[in-house]
Length: 420
Image 1 (tube, one colour):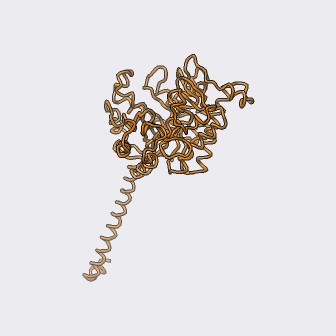
Image 2 (tube, one colour):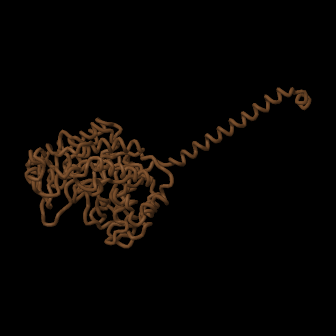
Image 3 (cartoon, helix red, strand yellow):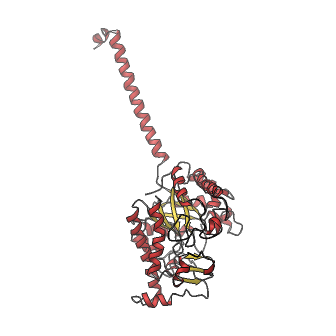
């Protein structure tokens, strides 16, 4: 062995040494590649929802006011997208059908008043089409947020656009609590609102269809939602009107889910209900809360069943209360919803009340910039909780007391990919 080495030519030695260096370098490169892959995995370790709602009803978040020039509307929209990116978010939930109207050129419903100030007036651009393209260009998902049944925040049909379907079909309309709604008990209404919403799914590669908490309207003391005639006509199989109303909403959810999967299989279907399904005092399956509203009984939305049956891809209950709030404690609702989602195909996200942070009218907990960050820390103990969506865009941008900045610093150091 030693003798052979001693007789090795200088050239052979050089070649051998070079081979050794190359082998070592290859090992180092492989190690670096492995480390790079590990770093990439660490940078995108989890699929986590990090979303923000952009509300357009009454110009809540966007556009800042009605009648702005198209370029200014567009610039404001892009600013919200850019803010989402800068805060480490990955999803924007844009309200595109606030009051039975549209933020895209729809053949079924008029252009929304929030754009021009006049319902039915063409704004000169396509907000939804722009939002989808620009969100995707920034690596954001775009969830199209629809309200199925709300027509107007007033009761005057004459104030609607001449072509508005509610004026063409006044028999579809119920006035209640100072507002106008489509009657969910009419099959023609259910078919129409689906057709109107699905038009956007057909035209644009939206990442999800999103409903909020408005199904039957929130109860108004001393008033009755007048669906007597619809119940007499279509409620024959139900002894109790409440069961019939829940069945109407169940049908809407199931039919929308089926249609979305048929039209665009990659588009998800998510719902963000009021955070209390039922109180335990009403139903032993309910949460340890004393909520004045229960979605099952008051909005006729059986959200628990939708999750357990896997009818929807995600649910994002609006847990708009602080930890320790006696009536509806975030720390009690979070594990309740985690248990509901456990074993189902439905992802659980949590709706967060960023708008309460720093509001002097809110309890003391909301004056602490760390309150929301504590919500995310609690959620880490529940693997069913796959992320959070913040209400809403105006507060994400302003961040009144730095609550969003605290969330970003504590939890969003690395980017995340939305769950699928």
